[in-house]
Amino acid sequence: MLYFFAVIDWRSVWTNGLWIVGSAVLLATFSYTYWLSRTTPPKLAEINQQPPYDRLFWLGFLLVLLGLVFTSSRWWETAVWLLFTAWAVFNLITALRSSK
Image (cartoon, rainbow, N blue to C red):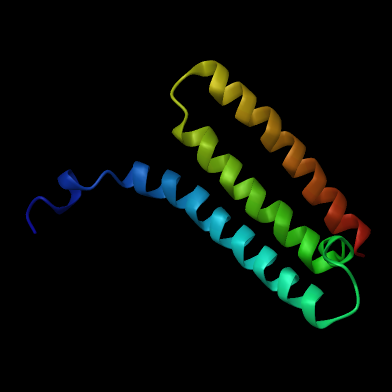
């Protein structure tokens, strides 16, 4: 217990936790919408474009991208992930505004 904070790299835990939680949100969203498409008449593409599910998709995608930004080691990787992150933020804001 004496070396608790020296052994665990907390920055790595939090940065890798971002993409793991984002992947879990994406998996849960796709799993639920797939189940809905099999039990109700709308198709999978139509369900994924409905307000609660498109917001969850972009939120999960944003978390994955933030995890990739913080774990990238080269400057050009960070730049690419930041471009995709800006795109995901734009789409999340658009999805949030369209549902109001």
